[in-house]
Image (cartoon, rainbow, N blue to C red; front, side, top):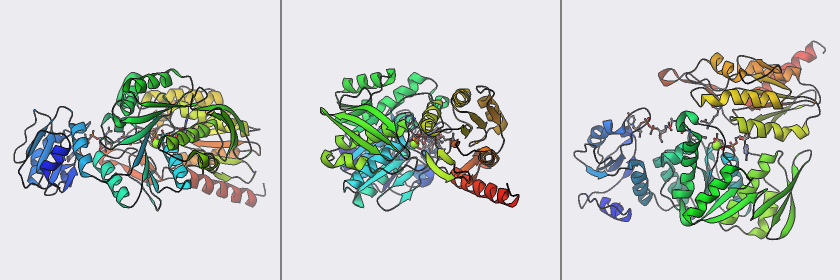
Length: 495
Ligand SMILES: CC(=O)N[C@H]1[C@@H](OP(=O)(O)OP(=O)(O)OC[C@H]2O[C@@H](n3ccc(=O)[nH]c3=O)[C@H](O)[C@@H]2O)O[C@H](CO)[C@@H](O)[C@@H]1O[C@H](C)C(=O)N[C@@H](C)C(=O)N[C@H](CCC(=O)O)C(=O)O
Ligand SMILES: Nc1ncnc2c1ncn2[C@@H]1O[C@H](COP(=O)(O)OP(=O)(O)OP(=O)(O)O)[C@@H](O)[C@H]1O
Ligand SMILES: N[C@H](CCC[C@H](N)C(=O)O)C(=O)O
Ligand SMILES: [Mg+2]
């Protein structure tokens, strides 16, 4: 595509050589090829401007950079907001895109909600995909990207690649990091949901207000002018604030939840393998049998239903589809039933609020003790560790604090920080496999084990920088292995 045509479409004033043709986009100079538009971003680790010369030498024909940056040998597209300008131009290049794009933000529930939205669309006969922590999931496959919101080039390339494959509906996860860095800016988003807001990522955002501001970029800038803001309305202060922001922008408001006006959650009744959910919608009451346990999963399912409605789904068939939702990988997933008949669940709770929600989800199903195994990730928000210890210790019966992804930190230091918030019912066990084994060893017939924090993850990240290693580790698999090892051992000893 001609560079000048692209710039014109993006509403830019700059013009390059008449015959210049754009062949791609890159934000890493090592990915520049002849004809690339390079984005020089000032990052957390290094300054992309240091690589402008190298990018031009590799064939970049235009560089999006701050007005003060030095660009020689290529067109300087100067903008004070480099990431946003780059996203706007890239969006003109990567076309077509799916007709219905929706986004989900919030501290917890993004992955679950995008996955459920994808499932609903699929049951309604659409060719749907999702992009998020679980990777890019299409009608045919699932591919990991390593990030919740991929980088801007990967994101746009995926949108247009999927559209070319015939995907018409996409739900993506808008992480606060992604929103803050305009990693998903540019494409037309017809609806966006705000699930909830609580403590996380304060290593990056520094204050709850700054973290909230990053999330609000979804309503302020990402959703299309005529789009819909879906808000989980639970009466919390943050839900109200989110609503005010969406109203200010002039978006259509769709509220769902116990305080919701468009879908009101009236009652939830847990059953053996799921729950019945009573809602009011357009003056009618209806009960949905949801094959998923836990209040939070109902919240995510209803938010997904709201997104489907906001993007034009046929309501006559929607509620039946909600009743057929499948569990999301690593979210209250039952890993194994031990020899004693007690289940072991794996969940991705890695914030105090999520731990509380996961424990609350399982509580109605426990007659004996709820045993929780978890830790906290290294090189991430340190202030959430004590509160996670406190929540688990207060709400579970037995707590085993162990390692998550230690990254660049000493795992003993992380465990100690978690233990600070915990009480008498909590013990510390180094090594996640050993901790899982100990939980399964003490499980009784009426007990339930919850292994929290890593969910679907396939590896354990140890070390950082050049010494970083990812050791294969999946909680579901380890729980199965330990359960069968312990089972075999007890048969041998005749226990
Ligand atoms: C702190 C953070 O968010 N960092 C992300 C960010 O990097 P950055 O812009 O700060 O980049 P940098 O490494 O300082 O480099 C600056 C620029 O120079 C370029 N560069 C760098 C080196 C070089 O040799 N040549 C070159 O051109 C880089 O490509 C970059 O454009 O942008 C990169 C590309 O988009 C991301 O890969 C990177 O994610 C890092 C690896 C990361 O760990 N991110 C986590 C914290 C994250 O984003 N998590 C959220 C999930 C949160 C949740 O689920 O709740 C996510 O969305 O995944
Ligand atoms: N609606 C919700 N309210 C409270 N907690 C929730 C909710 N949905 C999920 N959780 C908890 O948060 C965990 C993570 O869920 P999910 O992966 O859907 O969230 P996420 O927002 O994508 O997380 P991440 O920030 O890591 O991408 C779940 O395993 C569960 O413990
Ligand atoms: N998306 C989350 C994942 C945390 C998962 C947990 N296992 C950890 O490593 O901290 C984050 O980047 O904070
Ligand atoms: Mg996620």
